[in-house]
Each structure stands twice: as structure tokens, then as C-alpha cells.
Length: 365
Image (cartoon, rainbow, N blue to C red; front, top):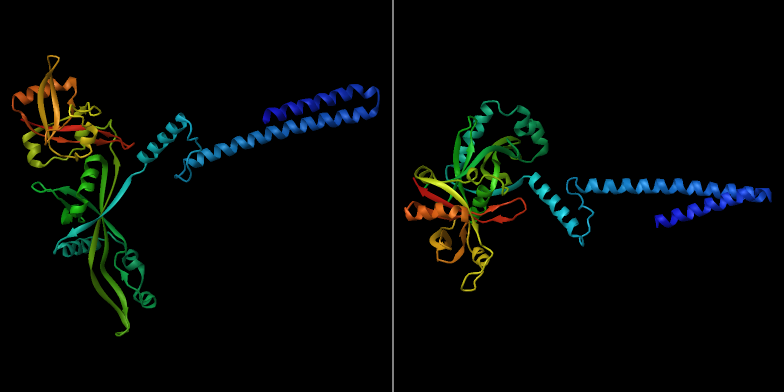
């Protein structure tokens, strides 16, 4: 369309020039010639401005598509390269933003008393200013409002979550004013798998304890004054983290029980050959779908073309893959020397949500 308009403009200018050459025949040709040339110059100026404006609009649309995820990038879904570009920006966006999770806490009988002591400790040490307590309202203000006004509203304290040494569950801790970790409860059973995945796949993890409840003031209609009461604190665990990339060091992200950490060396290897089918016709990827993180695996020696090799099997002896050729000899010899204590399935998730299948091996020292 732009080329067509350009050719039409050139034709108008050419006609104008011809009319100017014919001015000796009649003054009418002079007027027509000047008009045609003038129109031609005007159209050229207009088309250039339109093109520039359109280019700026496209640039603004592209920029805004990357701003706070307000729009998707203007990419054609029919183009492979465009789709890859779109996926690339999705990965960047996902890696840039920290994921956030909130969990209810299975509290104990003493949880409320411990939290109460910690809150009072923070207040006594002037951690909170006066205008932060009861939202800065005076008793007369609260009398006018008539609703509950909590001493601390939507307060949050540093916290932590970590596995117990001799148990399959996780303890939740709140930090007091002096940064001591005070145990306040456990993770509910239905949330254990999610917590494990966050702690194993996550990096730069931060935990906090969000509190609701506690001491509050309210106007008593019967006593005609503001009174102070207490509710039990309801703590919730808040976790934020980034996700591991396949380039990250796995060893820095693994959480071992203290007992195992002291007695065994850690070795992590990739599981290769997972896309093949076993001799019985069962696909290894289908078997892996049933294998969960930290499920125990078996290692089996064999020779492949006279070279040492190692199969990786589930605990019910289904083959899911092999130790890679450059690591197989070392693991083969460790099996021969009875140095292998345990092996676990340990997949690592990337920012693009692709799992890299890996095995964690504990070696006797």
C-alpha cells in the first residue's frame, strides 16, 4: 500500500512538471503544474509523518508488552521464531520475579504463649514506634470507631522452616528480637510435598511468619469505655524464592540430614537414556512419572561393549536410565567396593519448568 501511494505521488509531481513546461501555451498549465507539484510535495510529507508515527506506536506497543506483564508481546503464533522469542521473554519474566507461597501452621499448645513473649520483646526493645501500635489511634479514636483495633496489624517476623533430623516432617520457627529461632509448630501433612519441592528446587529462599490476632482494644458499650482483650495468635508461614537453573550447583541446594551429612559423601549425577523404551515395551518416561523426588533408587553393574556401565532402577527393579559413560566406571567401582549407602531420585527444575533427571548418591566415607 505504501509503495502504491509513493508511485501515485511521483506521477502527480511528474504531471505537474509537464504542465509547467507547457506554460508557454497557456497560463492555465502554469497554475495546474504548480498545484500538482504542490500536492505531490504535500503527500510526500504526509506519508513520511504517518510512517514515523506508525513506527513509534509499534515501539510503544512492544515496550509496554514487557512492562509488568500488562500485555503479551505482539508475536505471531504461526511463526516458530516468534514463538521461541515469546517463550524466551516468559522465561526471563519468570526468573526475574520471585515466587511466593503461604502455608498454615500446625500449631502446638504453647505456640500462642511463645509468640506473645516474642511480640512483647520487640515492643519493649522499641522495635515498634508508638504510632505503629494500635495503628496510632488513641482511646477516644477507638471509641468513635467502635471496631477491634489490634496492637499490631498485619505484622510479620523473620522465620524459618527446616526438616527434623529423625522425622519426615518440617518444623516452623519464628525469630525473636535477638534472632534466636523459636519453634512454633509444623507443616501440615498435605503440604509436605510442596515444601520439599520449594526447599530442593528453590534458591535464595526467604521465610517470614505472618501474624493475625493478639492483643486488641475495643469500645465496650456496657462499661462505656475502651477495654483491652486478647485473641490467640494465628501464624502463617510465608516463603518466597527463585527457582534453580540447570546451570546452578546442585550441591549447594541439597538439604541433608545431619546424620547423613556426617557419615557419607555426596555425589550427584545425571540420569541418561530416559527417553528409551525397556525390553518389556514399557517407556522409561512413563515409569519416571510415578517416581517422586527422593524416592530410593537401585544401581546395578553390567558390561557394555566390554566397558563398565551402571543401570539405574526403581526400587521395584524397573530400569529408568543409566549413569553417563564418563561417570560409570567410578560408580561401578564404588559398587564393587560396597561403598554405596543409598541412592535417591533428585530431579532439578529449571526456570522453564524442564526437569533434568538426576540421582543423588550417598557414598560411605
